Amino acid sequence: MATVTPLDQQRFLVDPAEPRSDALRRELEKLEPRSQRTFTPSGAVIASSSGSYHYTSEGRKLADFTSGVLVANLGHHPTRWWDRVNAYMGLVFQPTCDRYLKATPLTAYNAITEVEVEASRRLIASLRSQPGGARLEQILWAASGSEAVQKGLKAAIARRPDADVILATRHGFHGKKGLAGAVTGSETDEERDPRVRFLSFPMAECISIYRRREPIDLTAYREELNAAYATDGRRICALITEPYLGGGGSYHPQVEYLQLLEQFCREHDILFILDEVQSNFGRTGGMYAYSTYGVEPDVVILGKGMANGMPVDAVAGRRDVLENLGYGDASDTWSAHPLGCAAVLATLDEFETSDVLEHAAQLAIVIEAGLTRLMRLKSILAVRGEGTVWGVHCGSTADRSPAQVAAEIVKRCYLGDEQGRAIHLLGPLAGCVIRIAPPLTMDLEEALEYLDAMYEIVAEIN
Ligand SMILES: Cc1ncc(COP(=O)(O)O)c(C=O)c1O
Image 1 (tube, protein in one colour):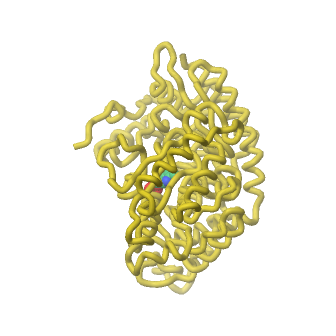
Image 2 (cartoon, helix red, strand yellow):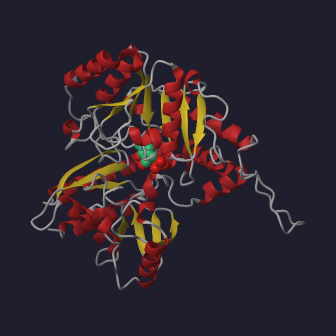
């Protein structure tokens, strides 16, 4: 039985000024087990969302510094995006028939829809149009990031009957289910899958720096890789890593480290799998993280922002890898769902025909300047990130532990400052790192204003 942690005893914020939200929080606690959600101290009850803002049940406006959980990269409910989703679904209002609309079916299980074929074609074209995308030849759809990781690893294991060992970089987050859970975290976690070996990730080298800004000595990492090969050799089928540690606390390594991992894979015919569930669709600055890191993955895991909030994930990879699974080995009720495929197409349209990446580059400058200012405060140890994905690493104060500081920041930002400027944040990563990842489309002036508000709020926490 799982142990009860102090986190399990935490309760959502109670605010007498929010009677409706409070009532809903209490009701939810009765109706759903706490395992349903990752704990977010604010327990924000969101009635509606638009652009870069959420609105609570009391009508209070919150700037969204999370994009959901890095999903609404284009903001919440962009009108043109929804129009496109509907158009790709072929939604037709039939004036002569009042019972049924006509549209693409809401199933992909026992039929092939045109929208699925088009989404696969367009996604492959997008991936391959970027530097480093040459190996990505097929799409295997999934309905969650964990599932996509699991499918990618299953295909890798199936490639060579004698090779079932997976190398994974330590403290990564790839999901909670099955093989995705097995490659998450480190060997000290319980119930380890005996096929997984962990490798060091350069956390110490990037604890207080931003990506690429300081050289890294790769000697120890190279030796560790060689030792892994000396132990398991041809039994190693794949190496999986993230462009940066996301759930592990926003550690963004120097690209040379990722290039070393890829080079090792090339030397030994090991598949290099890059989990881009968080980073894809513009988060780190390029359309995909690999497109700016000088690596060429054999398999890329996609998710979150790829459909701007619709639940779609996918594995993109070499044909000779993904074809190792037979009919049904990776199928399920929802994967390649037409609505998801329509959303992927609408999202690709938006990235390909608008200036979203250029705007994101401007926003990245604003965020970096706004957040690095926080390092002047006693309660903040470090600020790390790139593009529009950042982590604010909290330290301790006289009265609070780092985790308490982080929880306090989330709560106080939710309640807002005297001018009514309030911010929606995720529950801290790795206990004490606050994720900052607003929609790529957030207005620059507004970002500046809310970063200022955040600075004022954090400055009051001692
Ligand atoms: C890098 C990465 N991979 C995989 C996952 C798992 O995705 P899901 O929660 O959709 O299963 C996540 C989720 O945060 C992630 O950040």
